[in-house]
Image 1 (tube, rainbow, N blue to C red):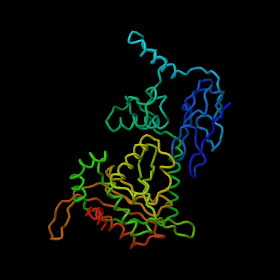
Image 2 (image 1 turned 90 degrees about the vertical axis):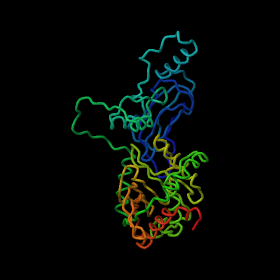
Image 3 (image 1 turned 30 degrees about the vertical axis):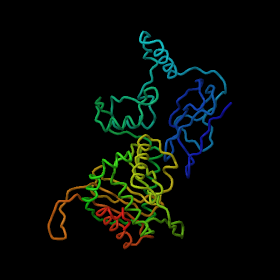
Length: 397
């Protein structure tokens, strides 16, 4: 007998919810085959079979809260279990491809339902958005979270149907509960204050326009503003170390490394994957890491190593059209930089002329317990100077 147990859930996480079982008692199980998904307050984890055999018993049902090391189920090693409908379908497909088109198509009764058999994140998105007509790219044609996101971005039909109930109560996911708790804790603990400035994005936009094609050809990623703002932030953090510090009891911990969290909005809630060692990465290195983390976030595959740590955070509400905001600090950090949309605004030039320039408002929310107003204002001034003259960053001025 092999026991299926809850694996380590990562730093500061001790409990998970059983989201979905992919096998039933008596089903045949291959070694390392996906058996069950667990949802924590940060990520969704997959638990695979430790051995081959038959699933003898499920100890923790869907919706149960389980601790690290808790028993999820039992596998009878070497036993011959019944083949599930999904496995039958795969065998039929193999048979059909080996015999040719003369072989009849498998019965629709054995087909996987792409919606009902989708993962919990994908099912939740479909229920919330009412999106329909999605083609699944997952295992056995299942609809994945990425499929739903792609469908929403490309424009799809929505189910009309009859009017539903006027209200609906849905239990908050562990991730949403954690987001709510941490945001409220941040408000209750930190002495948060937000200061603002504006950035003329003309030179940064000209730089990107001039070199983007060559940058893409050389590095395989586009040159975006996030890498430029990250570099600008690192330079400002080095000059003003309190913004990169945190409070621990009665002590201030100054960080001599620069791991920048990038706030990403997903259908499950806000997550903040961390780009590590930003002071040692090139613009291309930062862009590649942002792209990698963003894909993991969209697919719901971020792990604890991508979410742990972080000394400072950047959030970009501009991608949603936000003109101005007051972001909330991600504890135990002491500062968060908020970026916004770029809009043509009248700018008075040094010679007194007025021109329309692409302007972005930037915001720094900071913990006033350890960051003084002078430091916060200076930080944003440095962001402004570096972004309005990006060659400063390249020349390390």
